[in-house]
Image 1 (cartoon, rainbow, N blue to C red):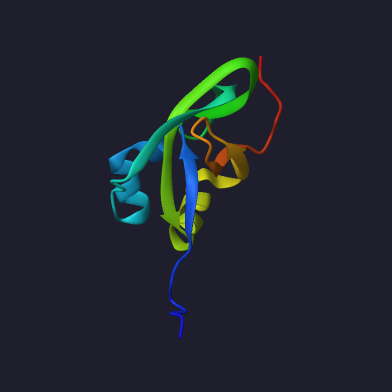
Image 2 (cartoon, rainbow, N blue to C red):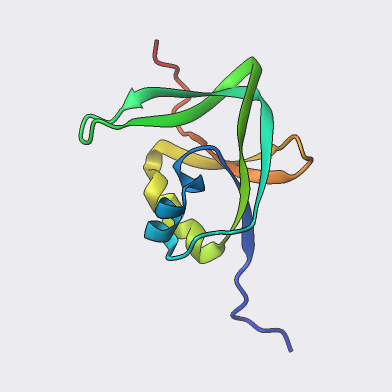
Length: 117
């Protein structure tokens, strides 16, 4: 009989603060030790949105013909993903993307695709 309490794991390409141990500990109560360092082609990271409430410039990835974004593939449980979704707010949404190491993973991308000049 299968254990119905088994939590699915979600592979997530992290290119910003979710790679940081302190952020992981604060959000999910643990530090993820296993990571696969990789990159995605055709994107760049912009920090062009400053939240007027906290003054922080948040990173986002946008398509760019010659771009390359470095980051890590990190596995999170379904329960942890719920917490990460809340942290990322409605500014981001999870989408599937193929990394340079051949893994099909999810990544937080901006929900609004407009580029601020």
